[in-house]
Length: 263
Length: 263
Image (cartoon, rainbow over all chains, first blue to last red; front, top):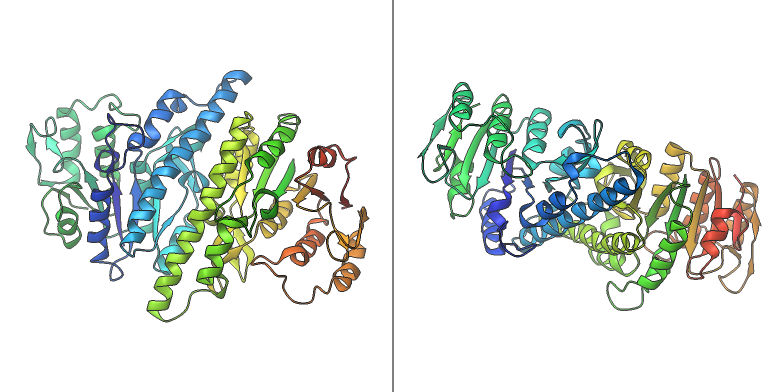
């Protein structure tokens, strides 16, 4: 089984119009997966892009649920609207995959996972496992979450993958990004790291000044690297450009262009 | 806590255009709930109406997943399209409830429940319980399901309620219908049964010729009565007209017009 993460920046322009969706890129991703399915099983997890992030920021979902009833009421509405925005993104993925004859099936992240300070504290993977057995392609997404510490929070796609990797032991996790992989420096400026070992990640985090949280609501590249380190305990990890046709196929085959992190 | 079931025929005309939605009726239902929330906690479960039923029938979801790869492939696509149609209905409910300032939160039935021949075999109510604690209104819906016996099946809203009632012990379950309650005979023809006891249900099922499954994909009134009998073990049950303003409020207060089944 292979887990494919489709980053928000791959299918959507965060600086563009609200809820913009690059259907051509997603159709190409689906076509590449279709070349390997059903020989290979897949789970797809996508990010928020211009769908979830604006709502999540507007309502300050990451700050949790306040004590005051009036403020909490507004926050609850924001929580539900953020989820609905993510369901709209997800519906576009399902449509694009079905158009390529793939039985992609929507699994609502917030119906399945409970977090504690943004990390998965509890998740029921029973439905996901059975979907795989029946040759469906479960499609999850970064979402709002019930949080044991803060009442409510955001659960990023990357963190879902860390949890799924622990529970389901995929043979490979592929992160699709809008750059060619992990750079030793700013994306597009520093040198592309084509091979990375778990042991080298801490030094790289230092060089990238990953001390605080990243710039986007789910933590960006620093968070991705930290999660990748945990994922690498259980699986091989690839970071490839999701906007360049063929790169995903290369990562699935194992001879592709991008960053390979050996488990 | 009160569970409100909004039948497909209350918000949608099955004989009308595909995916028609009676937003005025749903807004009125939301307004009546808003008069009791947050003093009272609610779970809402809605049916399929003109959303889920046509797809479910077209693809024969209730027949399960066949052995043959080609037939199974088509069935998988139908399974995912049926769920997407239900999510579109659900999104309209969330929108109508939010418009009345209610923090209705979508929980995807198929992400949470696994069936065996159409009955809930397994369901994780952890997220639903925590949503209630945080004063959200979980909104579930009749949906497709992974099925232990048949591979795939349909899980009706009524059956979800039977399970939730066992697990969560609501003080009341209210079924909203497009008629005034349960009739001793054809709806609108026989006499309205205003008070019903558990012990009288079997005789009523006989008089209604409820030997085989009902006429719609989820079993109709016969199935509803059979589920109501199980629900009445744990909770008071009301059947009222969801299209007549005030009837839901009457059932919530306990002095309303319709059929009351004492637990």
